[in-house]
Image (tube, rainbow, N blue to C red; front, side):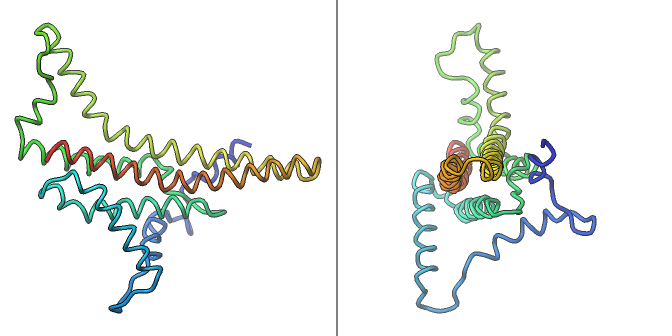
Length: 226
């Protein structure tokens, strides 16, 4: 039971070679593009959503912070499409892997922090010691603020991994219960199947929300350092 439960989180292989790279490169191929002056409704809706999301995230940034707009929009599109594709049957979700999420979180966090130390070193150092701190508490607060700064990329990665993994496990358990009850009690099966449909809708929302939350937090880290 445990092997079947966690089998979907094992990185797939093709002829003994890891296929995770191909899976990661697949979502961008699903983004439609247009070569014409007048776009169709799908591309127009896509562009409207991108502009809306970009405007909401970039409003609080200055000129230097807005140079990250393309990277942040690409990030939210990649995470959202990857999460949604992972909801398909017999598919693999790369964002359930903590290593991949750390590989996204650490460089973005480090880039924002390094930019802060390069451009506003006084403000960056001021975060380690709030104004008006009593002298005996200064060493302790510096240690706490340093730990809170270093734990930010881990919190980003763990949040995304935990939410996506928990949703997949819950869908797997309810789906297994639906299949097991189908030969025992039909009314109970219909109730459980209804719950499964509602959970699937919830997971679609969670997939989009987690992509937005991950990107928004990176944007907030950038805002604090620019």
